[in-house]
Image 1 (tube, one colour):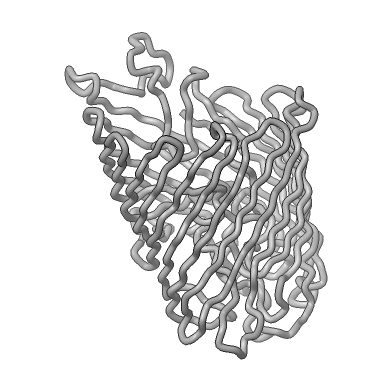
Image 2 (image 1 turned 180 degrees about the vertical axis):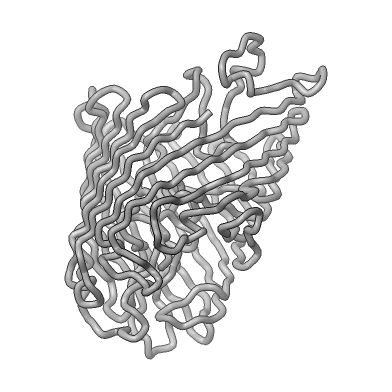
Amino acid sequence: MKKYIVKTVMIGWLAITTTSAQNKISWLRYDDDFTTLKKDTVKKGLDKVKYISLGNNNNNNISFGGEFRDQLQYYDNLNFGDVPPTYAKTDVFQHLRRIMIHTNIELGNHFRFFMQLNHTSRDFNDNPVTPEIDENQLSLHQAFGELKLTHWNFRLGQQEIFYGNHRLITFREGPNTRQAFDGLIVKRKFKNGTLDFFVISKVISKQYVFDDESMHDGLLGIYGTQFYANHKLGLDYYLVNFQSRNRMYNYQAGYENRQTGGIRFFSNLKTVNFEFEGAYQTGTFNDLTIAAYTVLADINLSVFPSKKGVIGFAANIASGDKDNTDDKLNTYNLLYAKPAYGLVAPIGATNMVSLSPYLKINPIQKLNVLAQVFFLGRNSNQDGTYSPGMVQNRPTPNAFLASDKKTLGQLYVMETTYQQTKKLSLSLDTSYFKAGSYPKATGNGADILYLSLKSTFRF
């Protein structure tokens, strides 16, 4: 069973900083900003590994950084109690470890080389390992060269990427093993925006030492962002071509040539904010014509200013196949998006109708809390449900179209993060998935309980 799961949290909400308030650790570590240390002659602690001069030229330097993450997870009724025969149990306790070390070499003002090693492991769970998620003993996770000019950046090699709100391409922060891509990205910078051109292929994470693979799928496209009204309003737009022989729809394999075009309109206002995103897909899968879509709306309101409270409501609809006997395929392909519904169950936002109220608040200093409820159902009863990695996992092949039920159930989520120091954070998360009529009609349909305790140290 593929467990393409990831923590569903608005990543921009969590600010990770270093020893100086002016230094920033980014989720994409090649975007770290430690420029305030460049001229600091008295560095302390781990700041000493930043901007180590190479020779007499201060513009030639090398920096080091890393991350150590430990996580304890518990699942009661993994995947609604439905697992493959190779699995020993559905009640799972496991320990996950992630170690990532990177170096950034700057040669002058225009060229740099970035490299990152990754180690992930899983203990105390007798079920088979899923390397894409659980364990990669040692890999060269990122390695690229970058040419930086005034208005252009050229980045070639293996790298993490994300765009917008992670609904097209993401690096997957939640799972033990993060996601990377091979390829070329050309970025054009404007006064109030950027435009990226990319040709990439997802890296396939393997379990053992330096055995990752790539160049199985292809992704070619553009992604642009334009800001208006002094960055209070923003517009993303994208057009992407995806080619693959590795994905199946209604358990049928084939060659996929799919185009995705979409826009995202969002705000950064003081009191009321919004996000609207829509995408449409065309192309072919074998001899089928693709016609698929997704639409999302999210509106939220700032409350309790002293506690930085936000209350909001989100709704999402994504198409599923309407009729498996016609000449069309209506299943929306998530490409490499973030899993929308968290770590509790391997469910992706395709063939889906989702309604979700939520609350975010800082009840005390350093503590962030997210409380959210998802009401989930299938859009079409002529199509199944898919994991965030687009692996169909319900119903089973021999029971396809055996049920016309649509209700997946209600997912209750509580996520907390305590920023103990500027480098160390602690998280306690819990989710409960109350199974609806569809999981019950296509399997055991047991309710799922998920618990997670995590500590993360970054420098």
